[in-house]
Image (cartoon, rainbow, N blue to C red; front, side, top):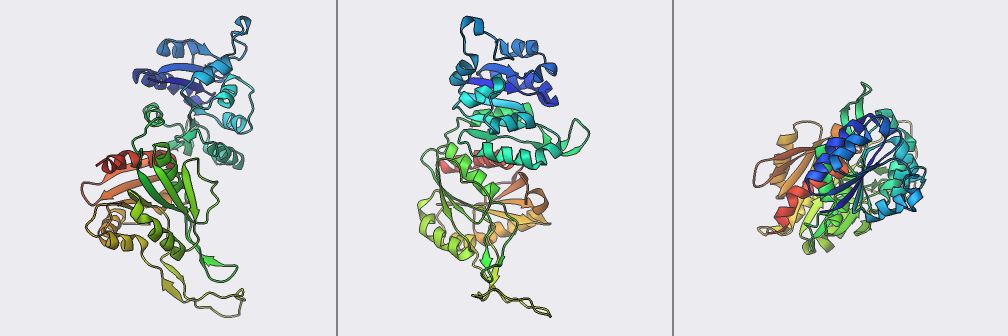
Amino acid sequence: MAKVLLGVCGGIAAYKTPELARLLRKAGHTVDVVVTEAAARLVAPAALAAVTGRPVRVSMWEGLESGAMEHIALAAEAEAVVVAPATADLLARAAAGRASDLLAACLLVTRAPVLLAPAMNSRMWDHPFTRRNAAALSELPNVRWIGPESGELACGWEGPGRMSEPAAIAAAVERLWKRDLDGRRLLVTAGPTHEPLDPVRFLGNRSSGRMGQALAEAAARRGARVTLLRGPTALPAPSAGVELVPFETALDLRRELRARWRNCDALLMAAAVADYRPRTFSNEKLKRGAGEVSLALAPNPDLLAELGRRRGTSRTPLLVGFCVETDNLAAAARAKLRAKRCDWIVANLARDALGLETTKVEVHRAKGRPLGPFEGSKSAVADALLDALAPLLQR
């Protein structure tokens, strides 16, 4: 199996890491552990050594008398690096490229996949500095995330910031090397549409595009050839292996889909396409008046329903739709499954997804009982959805 480097930071969730180390070793991996000095106050290095059967490193100064370069050797030999818990301090130092302790130095040296499992107070996770640091780390092609989860925190607060459970982290480690989509061609849509009213204004929605981009990046890691059709978002460019094609309006997306959908094995329609667009476009900015203004809207085409009709009785490509509702989720998903003639509808409530880093979804299928719910970070949910989808693409 693989050589896994487990980094442990000084968060209260460090007490869970002996169980994580045990699960990784049970899976057949060789586990080396690096703990920060703060983590060593919360979890005994001796306990981690007993579970892994290997010495635990704390300081860069250990072994120097023998000429060993621990931070080089540990990081260079690792086939995966897992940091759990990953504290706000660690994220800040890693994003800045600092090598102020052994763990941070290892993160600079390694080129292996790095799985970060954040754990911190919800206000710390939501702080603009932490969000900026997480965004910077997400741009690195080898960085993956699991969590944080929402719930009761050690400090007594409720909200995002809880470290994912050891079993979930261990499962995510196994997915780092998964290549179950080798040779498959996936077309993924993400983000909102902007339907222009005048040169300044548009009709849009609150979609961030994170779910669709997470699916595209996860599929590429698993060996698929992925094209991502992405609407206007503030997201960074997707990771290596994903072809990015931008669009703005529903009609733009329709054109891109018609040119590509026949050549893919699966279409994951995660974009939030506007149901209506302004009937007319003003070449000049519309001026404010004294009275009420009526806006005439024209319906946009139902892009997924169009493709479902075009596909007919064929089973290729696999069609996966997404829907966001405010109530009656299951009934709405089943109705859309029939109306759009697709294979899956991935459904969630607006309060569980829009504008958030996390999501909670359920899958309604044309054949079979519903799946889920799947809950967690959007990258974790993306992998869970692909776990269920991959066997259908092997037939």
